[in-house]
Image (cartoon, rainbow, N blue to C red; front, side):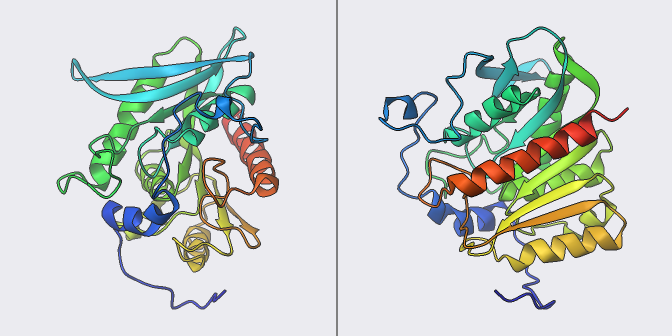
Length: 277
């Protein structure tokens, strides 16, 4: 793996992310929430059937109109819990995204995945040219507004867990809005408005496989170095031999050992920064 400082400088938009990361999704049949339940062997990180949580589809209303959907999971126990937004790099129908929300609920959070790229068709390459990073960030804010008014969500800021393009968008959102108190980005690329990440002050945790064939692993070093140079707290964890999407049990590159380790680090990071007074 090259770790030189002269990593690719091209600015990627959402379409580029999808072209690069789409290979990991191509040919996948979306399982839906419960599709994997019919398999004989359950992936060790699948928790959607856990009786301690409740979860399902939600629809957001913005400016008085129903706009787009999301997926929410929360603990069944009474009380208030920190809110965490799960930002996918593509449509949230792929089961590991609802499962990520469910895993957050098991860890004591309210997990909500907004369909930030809801303009996409079933074909992951068919993207509306008029939808850009700013639109995706606006969708994150709509979802944050939804969380803010839920009686079971604790106030005081939110966490973001983003994957691929969703990781990059999470970083941009943190650069713009101080209400975001923690960002975890899995194998994020660098997209448009790259200069904005110098404005991030939120603690950031990065997860990157060394054998990622969709996003150059050197990109994680670039992001870390920019954040460090501007005094943002940042952690970077490497996963030797892991390819793109190693956390997603719906994909061929799923690594249950690394998925468990990465998720432990993720929840510990969120507890630290979302439970601070």
